[in-house]
Image (cartoon, rainbow, N blue to C red; front, side):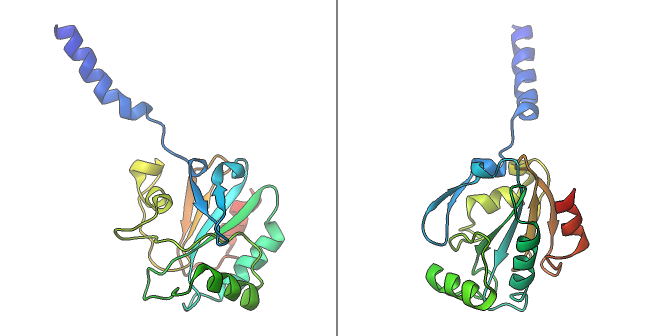
Length: 179
């Protein structure tokens, strides 16, 4: 009986060590056009995930995100934008209005997803994964503001975070893409 109890305790203690964390590739979301987007199609690519807003002081980063995408976007790298209205209501528009704004003002061609929540009670499951170490196996983080960037490797794991003030063309991001 004692051996069984010890084995049971060891199993309970060891199981979290062998639990496999989710990766980006385990998620799917809606695109800004309402289509299903399965992140598993991005296996083998580096992914930059950024929460965006149209009426923010950082909104001009759309231009540099587009430059980054034009220069490095390929079979090995992609940018995914997530409009979010979590910070001072700086993304109040509908998906159609956001798409129109991004296209007409910044000629955005990188994939944009449907507007989500990146914090709070209605946080999207993807952002729960991005911000909780128990989900991603790497780090806890807090989305500080619009245009926070998450760097995801080819296997779908978080590598690093670039906070909102970090320009998309910053050496830290460019060097990571080029590695």
